[in-house]
Length: 296
Image 1 (cartoon, rainbow, N blue to C red):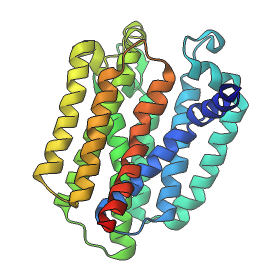
Image 2 (image 1 turned 120 degrees about the vertical axis):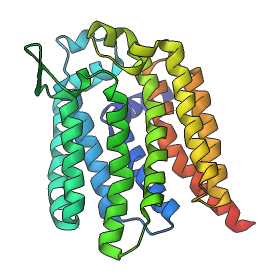
Image 3 (image 1 turned 30 degrees about the vertical axis):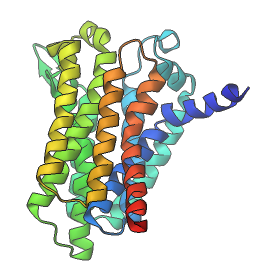
C-alpha cells in the first residue's frame, strides 16, 4: 500500500527532473558554503529552473520512435506524461527569462548563454560530418566532459561571478579553479555509471562514450580514479575547514562504493536516486558536519 502511494511520487520527482534540479541547487549551496558566504536566492532559482528546462528539453528532443515500448521506465513515464513535461519545461523557461534579465550581471548572462548552448548543442544536430547532421554527443568521448563542464560552470562559476560583481567579494583565480576542478571530477565520476548502463544502446547508435571506448571494467576504474583525483585536490589544497574535509571525504567514499556496486542490472531508481542523490547528500553531510563541529 505504501509503495503504491510513494512510487508515483518518486516517479514524478525523478522523471520530471525536479529531483536533479534540487541536486543542482544543493551543488550551488556547496559553493556558497565552501566560500563561507550567504547564498544568493536568485542564483539558486536560476540553477533550479535552468536544470529542469535543459534536462526536460533534452529528453523531449531525444524522443524514441516507440516510447511506450521503451525498456526504460523513465522514457515510458516521460512520454506518457508528455503534456505535463512540456508544461513544466515552459514554466521553467518563463521563470528563467525575468530572473536572468533582472538579477544577473552581463558576465553571468553570458555564462548562462554559454552553458545553454553547450547543453542544447549536445542533442541538436548542427554539425555536418560525412554528409550527416550530428550533435556534440556524436564526438567521441565528449559527453562526459560536456556534462561535467556545464555543471561546474553553473554551480561554481555562476555563483562566483555574481559574488564578485554584486558584493565585491574577491575570490582568487586559484581558489575558483580548484572549486571548478573538484566539481568537474565529481560530476564526471557519477556520470560514467549512466553511460555504462546505456553501453549497449550507445554502441547501437554509434555513440563513443567513455565506457564504449574503454570497456565496462576500465570505465569503473576510471570513475574511481576521478574520485581519487578529487580527494587529492581536497587534501593537498586545503580550502575548507577540517569538518568540511571530513564531510566531503565521507561522501566521496560512499559515492565510490555506490559506483562500485552499480551495474547494468541495477534498475533506474538506483541511478537517478542513489547516484544522482550523492550531489544532494554532499550538502546535507556538510551541514551536519558543520553543526556538529560548532557543538564541540
